[in-house]
Image (cartoon, rainbow, N blue to C red; front, top):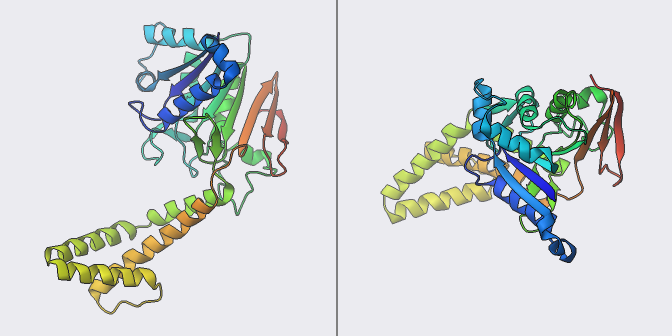
Length: 323
């Protein structure tokens, strides 16, 4: 029997992206006429690991815990493990329970320690997919400064979450690991994975930088308050407000003539910039066979490969000692 394990550290409660991942892995491992003949030979299991990690982070998780033993028994014979969590492009040390980031779930060292508790030592090599947006992205995350799909210098490779996580865990387990340079997506019906293109990553970062500007929340709140006041003034007042707002939206060069118009202009300027970045992202959709970094370690030798580099073939990024 081939067993595939999906470990959920992405969505508490099992909703959101983890459901698409689990459905996609199930579809991929069991689809097709040949697979259907041997359906009983393929098992895909979802393990919600949040409670275990929470206990581990406060020092309350022990190998003798029946929950740990149950997971270790399942993982011991797994053909492949999908470790799902969230990452953001600008953070190479932590993973998150939300795609938006926020409070970190744990750092790479804590995650590695936790996974080693769940992965018994075995003679065969573990095949681990780190399903984490931007997991393999380096600290120089800007495409304009470093081509993540090209020949990334080893000193940069060593800064990614994936590298640091792999360095910790591969010291104690035989393991092959994959990670991605951009946002990861899974088709729930085919199991086909996709990765965000570099130009879209840049636009996504620009959008997040824009939305974190200190003026954004006050400008948005001021606009919403003005909109509410206009609505309370009756249909004519509200229609006039909406028409004025549309006029500022249509003409980026329009100049505010009073305080009310300034509120509208400030808001529409923010929305216009945001929509420009979204348009770039929409025009450069995620791709299959893109942004996949493979880490293997044999003896003391580390090998890092970009599976789908610019020319469509493998690109050896590094081979040598792991430091």
